[in-house]
Length: 190
Image 1 (cartoon, rainbow, N blue to C red):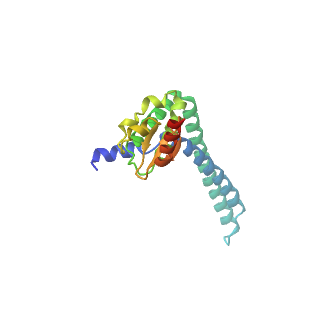
Image 2: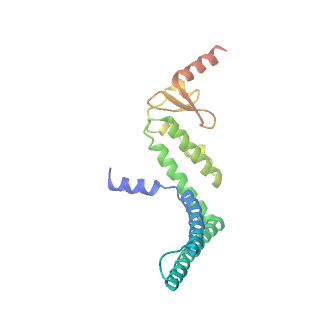
Image 3: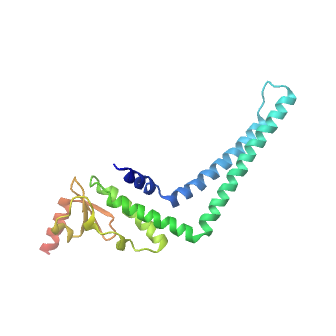
């Protein structure tokens, strides 16, 4: 793999919008945990002298509470930034959409369920920013094995190495190639 490919993989390997949302949740958990720690330290007893113990507890509580406040400040900032700056959020989501497209077109053809999952994620991102996912994906350009003409008309959008096909109006059904051919035969006989 070339250095450029490694940089592309690293850049597109993270969904920033989801990462920011996860970070806000994690910071909130840390904030609550540190506040609880502060409370527990306040109840802690050791073999130190009464004045030393009192001073240590006071310092530990101050440090823990300060960390909780700093974490709260970061969470509040990120929460505000992501909710109030629609342009930045839109740009992050567009980047995530293109990352998903890159991931879809790098699909190795091993399991069509992976492709189904990525397409679902791409659709969710596109719905948030008003893009039409169908305008962004051309299944004939997938690097996986080409879909035979008779199956493409069903429609089958992709075929993996085990013979499972991605189909359905929302690209959300997985059927084995034998099942697809049975359905085609049923449709032709009626």
